[in-house]
Image (tube, rainbow, N blue to C red):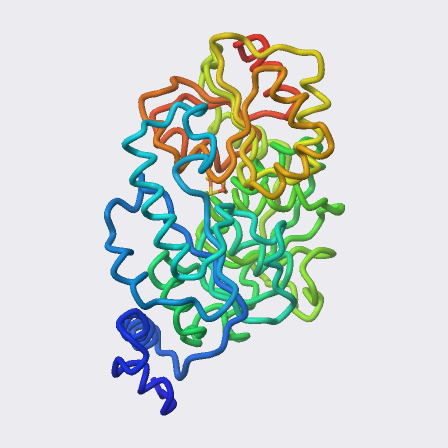
Length: 395
Ligand code: F3S
């Protein structure tokens, strides 16, 4: 890979330890994937923030002289940074997680702790290069916005933040952003969980191919973020083209290879994602993190209701969205019902293994990770999840 004089100096340690180590990572990646050069990026999203996943990763060493060069936000941590006790997190875990957060703070990252950075001010524009980890956000950035990013790992994203650049390969290059398979959707997705089920179907069938999706009659932001999270969880490519949604998708020809998604496929998705479980002891809304619109909807449905005493209900969102909810009175309504806000964290990265037996959620991706945490899963609409929380049962 060709390096400029300035990049050579960084690699030689002239900008300190963190930049030197970062350049080593970026050059190694560039060499593996055949990148010709490094390119400037506008922003970074760093995943792997939870102490639960990260452990003692030696971030304090990097924090000694590492400072991010571009707008850098963080994925959810393993706990609500302010109300961790309310969510049943141990003091020991909280202390370790706080050390991780402190290291990121010293590096100059924004302690956003959300997987929806695009909802809180880190919003790239069409065609711009970024280096994001967190598959749902990467898919949203590539496919809904039309920004360009590979699916970074935590270390390569942080390395890009310290250098302000990333190797030019993969989805940074237009020749790799071409659809391989035409997916014609004949179903009409009505509830939010249907978008996760649609993502399951397309992800499973498209596998490693880039889909060009037709037949979708418009989608709102919450539907698209749910779809993005699911399609990349059950498939593997963090890029799709959706007619009428993805900017400039019409410049691509429809691929010859083609499959359809019909009602029977969606039914199969629900059957595969759902377990045969009735008693629900955990309900979690907000995977990806809730928008203010979703929080408002949760508040509307919970008004004058009471959560079942044997069920824990989390509304996972960013602290910034929670602050809007506070101002609009949604927080009071939600908390009066017995439900809790889980800011800065989520059902996948909090240390939940062994704590709950079953989860009801609107998120197909949430079901995938909850199964890994040993929970039985129920995927459904927001109304169905709220009802499950009130009754302690899936109807
Ligand atoms: Fe976000 Fe956690 Fe879901 S990171 S997409 S809420 S699994």
